[in-house]
Each structure stands twice: as structure tokens, then as C-alpha cells.
Image (cartoon, rainbow, N blue to C red):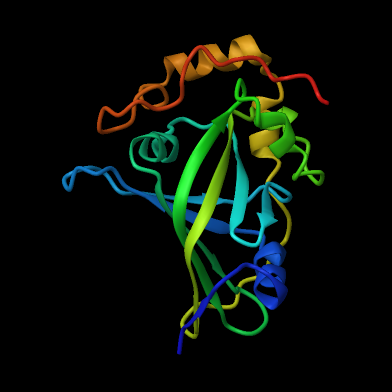
Length: 197
């Protein structure tokens, strides 16, 4: 029933870009480590960079498990489900990398996200994923659910932070600089946002 794709284009790309929600899964190399599964859903925060590369904006939060796992081993799976229209599930398995604010590539990558203002969300990195396996499956058991709108709470919470106070917020959180399993997470202190090109 499932199909494997060589690239992210055409109908597949259209489907991915229309979804309001996707999920990321990562894990440490240690078999006893904590598997992480995260929902991502700020409209405009996901982009197809090219036929085998995707990226998403990594916003402020109370942990940094995905960042820590990617820094250790790079393995990541992204998943989208059709909650409306024909049933479909798409997974992109690949190698991911967190690109931090002080990386020379950061500003150029940020240009792939013209539909979202990252400022109020406390943008801390851009996650870039190179696809190694792209597959879809039926999704027959995924229920119909409707999208109403993005919640405003994340932007409302982090809009009041500047670079310095955001860095202080992260430093107070137990699992931002270090993951649940003790892996290096978000490098702190947080560099300032680079000036737009």
C-alpha cells in the first residue's frame, strides 16, 4: 500500500506544505535513552528547501531534546497526517542538523520562511533535514479533524523576551542546555539574532 519516493516534489510536496501540523521523532544512540516525539504547528514554520531537503524553525520551549539528539547522531523522522481530504501519511526519514543563530547559514535559511515572523516565538535554531527515505502510507485509521487557527499563546508568551532574557529563560530550564539523558542541547548563552541581509 505504501510507496517510496525519490524526491519531495509534485503532489507529495503540495500535500506536505498544506498541512498545519507535523511531528518529529528522534532518539539518542543509547538504547536506554529517551525517545522524543514532538508536534510542530506554527503556520509558515516549515519549508521544502529542495527536492531532498526540508527545514523548520525551532522555537523557544522548555526542553531541547530534538536539538540534543541531532547533535549526537543526526537521526530524525518527520511525519504528516491527512486530517482532511483523502487519507494519507507521509514520513521523511533522514539526517538532521540544528543550524544555530551564529551559524553563517542561518540568515540564508531564514529566507525560506517568508510567511512567519519568527521574532515573537523566540527562534533559537533552524532544523535542516536531508531526506534518506521518503514514504507514504494509507492513513485509513487517521480520523477527520478540522483546523481552526493557530493558538496565539506561544507568540504571546515569548514576544516579551529579548535575546538576553530569552537566554536567561533557557539557562533556568533543566533540559535546554542538557537533554533528559545528559546530552549537550542548546548552546548557551544564546547568540543574538543576526541582522537581516
